[in-house]
Image (cartoon, rainbow, N blue to C red):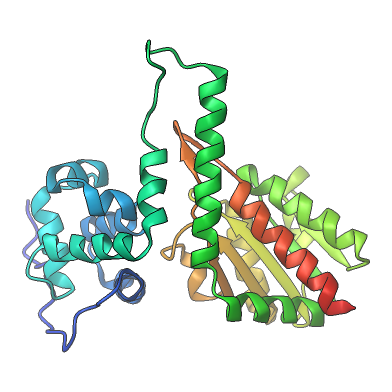
Length: 285
């Protein structure tokens, strides 16, 4: 049976978002009110901005797992006349930031002239994709948030770092780097089902650095909520504004990693982690 509850907001907006960043902020604010299908669209928009700008309505709907009419309803919910108006925001962003366009091109499937995928071609693709993603990282990270995060790390009595699965290497690297600077730090990785014991020493004067990308790890989720309950500061490194932890984190860094041939990199995340660590070293001096 189809639901009789309309998905379109009855409220009129006094002004429409004029940038992708403004639209994403509005999506985050409205996410709890969205229906299940509109949430699918929201997640796809936030995580695939280049595809929104260049793909057709049918292609976007297929990738997002919804009907094309749902895209129109999504646009209407946020006050737009149609989904083409939403796409226009993403196209304008690419005009302002050409590297976004190059990033999309670099992530298209490429093969050699004879259809053979060679190690040399893979090296080229990964190097190009990571180079462009690092350029995008520079555009997206706000200097004032970066500086504030470093300051709060410097004031912490202890730093707890949580990263599991694909994010585990970034967490271990940060632990290693901070240890070399004589910063008291601990990794929360849940090995041996010891996550509760690893996080139990988090206090109000601690800082938790949570590194989590979709699908978000259970251990990291538990650590974030525990740190929030204890009143500790939380620095979140994630891949989407729609990550649930953004609502309670004190400092949020959104990192778009390169995705080449279905494999996501860690270069941009490690670059940000290294920046935090070295900046903290200078702050302590």
